[in-house]
Length: 207
Ligand code: AP5
Image 1 (cartoon, rainbow, N blue to C red):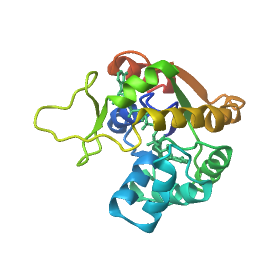
Image 2: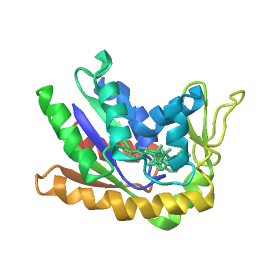
Image 3: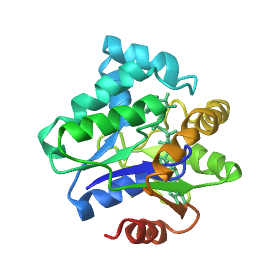
């Protein structure tokens, strides 16, 4: 199954993708995670990504699409994947369709996790990530187990989050009609317990 998780920053795309991996038996492909890995490795590409990510701006399509295509071609994604944070522009949506078509596949569903702007800041400023595993936590809503060292993402400051949210509303939300006209979009409320939201997504995708 090829599933797109869509929604504003902090909506819970990464958290829910991690929960769906085992259930669906396909990997999570997060372009944000792929970019952070390049940045951490100190590659030239990683430095280029950082110029945009640190300001909360979208990385240019040409760079993102190449990175994504490379990951989609890995053996573990041969039967499908959960796309987290991709596509974010019309060009990326078209590229995703083309790449999947070449593999004889197509998108099963685009699940939009809705979250109001006022809830985003609280979610994001409390987010912590285990750098060893990539597991996402929240200081209050999903605290890391004792003994785990976690860190805060560089772009999780209030100022950068506001820019990321604007970019979502301006550049990414307008991609939805492309999927709506094909009847692929399902909306789920992103407010609630983690299990409740997983259940809503399962119902939306029939899993
Ligand atoms: P990316 O890494 O994709 O970040 P994002 O889209 O801004 O989304 P987040 O990771 O912030 O949020 P999420 O929805 O995954 O929420 P999470 O589950 O962590 O992108 C970062 C940057 O990379 C972009 O700004 C851009 O520069 C670049 N980039 C990436 N992809 C790109 C692309 N395709 N094109 C161009 N540029 C690209 O949850 C958030 C917090 O809330 C966590 O602490 C979690 O524990 C908590 N939480 C989750 N669910 C709940 C709940 N139900 N109740 C309470 N707390 C909850």
